[in-house]
Image 1 (cartoon, rainbow, N blue to C red):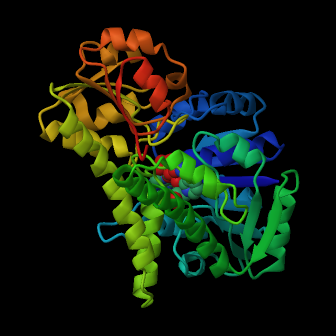
Image 2 (cartoon, rainbow, N blue to C red):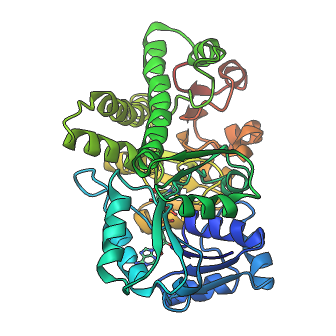
Length: 428
Ligand SMILES: NC(=O)c1ccc[n+]([C@@H]2O[C@H](COP(=O)([O-])OP(=O)(O)OC[C@H]3O[C@@H](n4cnc5c(N)ncnc54)[C@H](O)[C@@H]3O)[C@@H](O)[C@H]2O)c1
């Protein structure tokens, strides 16, 4: 098949590379010439394990082409995917301006062949029908197209595996021809097919992210009780997670969820529900607990650190990504800077992005041990694998005071005590 993606971020580029690798001819439309040039030379612009290799392989096979031209790509395509950002507005609503302007461009350029226009961006219920109206307003007479919602569930850090091996492919459409086209495109991929209405598909994506965020906030809520009452949240989560109805996954307390999806999608669902007159207090509580989780580690640091020199390990919102959008690290560093802490940070992939926010206000290092040099405390904010087996004796030697605030519970408290650290983790 011939397909076009508009947008080459974590979703657009990954999915485009996967469909190219499955033998399709894939065009990717972007709007920044400099970025398109770098993509065409094999630089994915973002860090995602395995992505650079897959991109280079498919560029060499001439199955993927980057361009800023709708007119050279849309008319040839069986499917056009919209994969641009939908960031939150000040009031929490999803900003649909890019999605809708892209829809107009697609509409103007639809050709003589039947085309499915499918939205992979996460958009509130009702948006796909707005996309259809935008297209109808500008398309040539007689153009044959259908819209279909095809929400994306990949996770940054494991995006290629998630796309090659999805749990499910959700297709929201009321046109059998569009459903059949998308089923054909996804045929080589495993996973269940969930064929639903357009509205259900749109809601599925927000409802899925919101329940995952809820699990994290629930684990944090229980961790607050454990800290005050003397329980161990790891034991509690193990005890409840073994119940098949609950499951252990995502019951992870820490410094809260972040990233480009959970915070904005929870906000957008609250906004949608509230506009419809639904009491959304369950999800506003989820947000409040998430904020409290970030606040708690700041309070612990202020209460228990005597000096002002702090090392930070981990800036990305989770391991295996360079993404720092809504990362707890940004919030926590801002708070610590306000309290006049001097910060030296290490992250294997995300320093470049964090530097765009903090510039020279903090020091960045490429060596985890350098971040701990003469430090009064070490703060761990992302559970990168390399921290799990690190030489803690060397860390202790390098620090001024052997004090660790572990926001991701990666070490065993008893072992840390034996090693001579003062060790604060979450809910233990
Ligand atoms: N990142 C994730 O893990 C993830 C997972 C599932 C769904 N989503 C959803 O997918 C959508 C995209 O997310 P993302 O993380 O890939 O975003 P991103 O910010 O990484 O990428 C957005 C892309 O859109 C491009 N773009 C912006 N304006 C454009 C325009 N006018 N014309 C053409 N391209 C334009 C940008 O250059 C960029 O390549 C969002 O709605 C998001 O919620 C994201």
